[in-house]
Amino acid sequence: MRKLIYLAIICFLTCNISILAQDKNPLPPESKSDLELTCEEADARIEDIQKRIDALNKRLQELNSSVAKSEDNLKKDTKELLDCEQEVLALIGATEADLESFRQQIGVLEGKIRQMKALSNDVLADRRPEVIVLANELLELRKNKLSVIPEFFDKLVSLCREIRGLYREKKVSGYTVGTWAQDRDCL
Image 1 (spheres, rainbow, N blue to C red):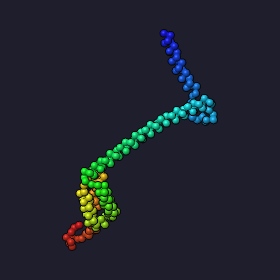
Image 2 (cartoon, helix red, strand yellow):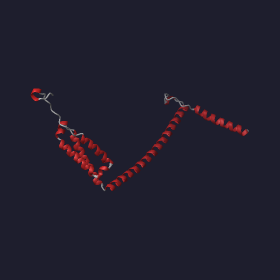
Image 3 (spheres, helix red, strand yellow):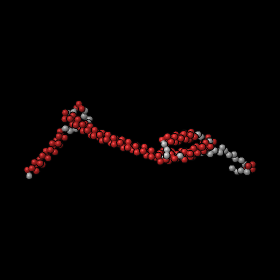
Image 4 (tube, rainbow, N blue to C red):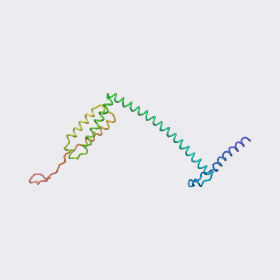
């Protein structure tokens, strides 16, 4: 029984000492300048700042660890992507040079379409044969095996829409209304 009482007293004193220690050095208000602090308040403020620094350093270490892990994952994923791209090229029987050449052909076609889109509707209507040539160039590119690669497939679909948008009809310049007796036309 005595041991229990001693244990209770020790626990009580330990808890109260920590509470008293906290009350002994209360954190001064932020509005109080460093020059106005007492030694106990300055110690409390330094202790608080050190706790904040320790917490921030711990958070920094966690973030650095997370960044390092993410960089490792990125390297791994990049390598897997490059391996996958090489497998796709091997499956369709193409080389990096073929890929680059196809990319340039699409770029040239994009440039021609961009130039045509800058023209007015009347000029586009007059240049309909050139628009048809662009559509045929696009069809030739779509026949290439490289057109199934997602990078190119989406671009070719987009170019197809843009070419369709280039077709214009000539506007009727005007209509002269005549008399019924003269032209047998009531409009």
